[in-house]
Length: 468
Image 1 (cartoon, rainbow, N blue to C red):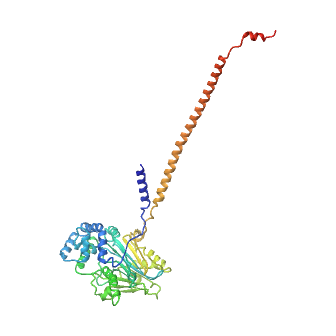
Image 2 (cartoon, one colour):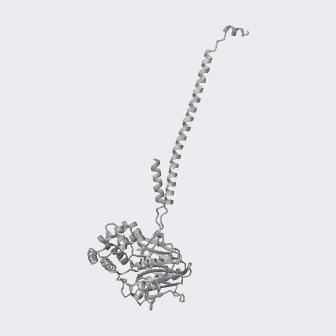
């Protein structure tokens, strides 16, 4: 009985504190470059999330991708691809091949439809960067991918003095989606460049998505690089060489368009030490945006995969215009990192399939998993993404129910005791009356017996007392 009561109490406590609140802080790993060379970190996180990765791969082969596309890709590679990361991937995830590693990374790269924002801030001082990792809503199973990626995502903090760095990625990934190097005083991220020389094709449907994934996987097998790979190598090289890449950091990623990227990308740079920020295309020429404190709106830049229309800004991608207006209205006066981070949770920077939003300054990082529900207008167009309702305070609910139960139990107990008390009084009263009657009867009998046993007086004596 006591064990059952303790078990019930434990379950109540678990219920009270299992409520879900959004946004959620993502998993954070604190380490150092010496303790976690990238291959070691990759292997550890891939092994830790092997079950989820295995489930994603199974769904890719059975549901998400076309069998014909996968077969063609594997025939194209013909088991010729090998790398240290692929070897660790196969070792960590059961029943996988090197080609699975390429498909896995291609899958999440193609599924991404993200945005980036830069801001010149004052609290703390310096340039900020915000990045949203969003799954493309044109994919019919985007919600499933969103959930998988939230399980896989983590932030890693390298605590190495002046060479410290922070980055966000997901288990099994080639590299980082966004990173900050303290030594370089630089924050870096990227989005697709749909207006570039090699634009990323807009996803049409699931079949088109499948072909895009396998085409990218072929390019990766042929030696093409993703920006995320270079973000990872950038911070490790700085630590190993104890110096910055020459001649400039931007050249490290662009090299006059000679980097072997499968698509055109827009690379965002935030130099928090010099209060500078810019967005450059990986093509040799063609696109550049920079923070400019001399103009009224040059303190912020928002960038989607669509290029900003320099000549007619109001004809730019609505996502850019909408978020820049929101920043102008709500953040311009404060220019704080918290205000910047909160405002980036506005649609369309945050959508129902936005996995996380990360904001970095030179000294702080805010990385949270996201959840919201799309709000539609009469034309069935998305106009906002609302926060989920606040979590139920189960502790209050349980305590209220417990109080009600106690009141009812007390009431029932009181009634029972009152009846017992009344019955006790009645019994005592009856017993008292019975004793009194019995005493009276006994006294009468005694008197009667006394009278009967008393000696009779002599009649002569009585006659002598009579005077005539």
